[in-house]
Image (cartoon, rainbow, N blue to C red; front, side):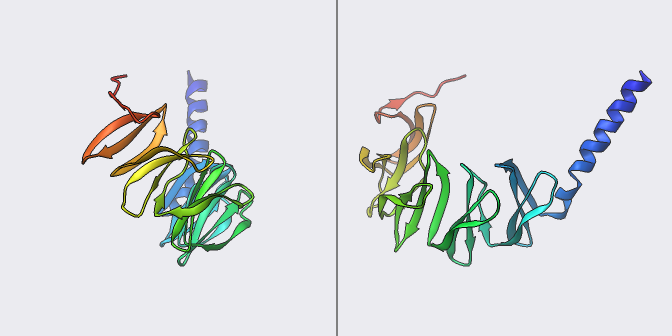
Length: 196
């Protein structure tokens, strides 16, 4: 029994010591691609799993890594880092989101579009607002503030008809239509919430 308690105490001590570095930051995110976003005094950077600062606390805003890249903002311009902390897309964008389904939503000249991992524009800058892809569809809005969904070729799958549109998860997305929140499937039909 004494051996058990000694092992348990050692585990708690090691586990507790391993996370001591988190106390020096105002905010610590979950790890993704081997790095976690940390924030202190309004500036963000990234640490490795040992708590070593890999990307200095120089960004005004930063997102978690997804698909090996993270969107970061300095001043009013966005760009992307790779998981080594190197800038792979210069900070020239007006807005940027995480990579999802191999594409990232970005904003330039007042409009949103989508780029691939090589930062080539694959869906033109044409939307008033937009969110990332999920399950092959992305919510986008037009100049009237109405939302619909496009596929990865940029074609409309569900026309502009919603006051708000969220990501698809397990084939369903939460949208607002006629000021009422509903759940829809990928055909745009209302579905009931499951009680699972």
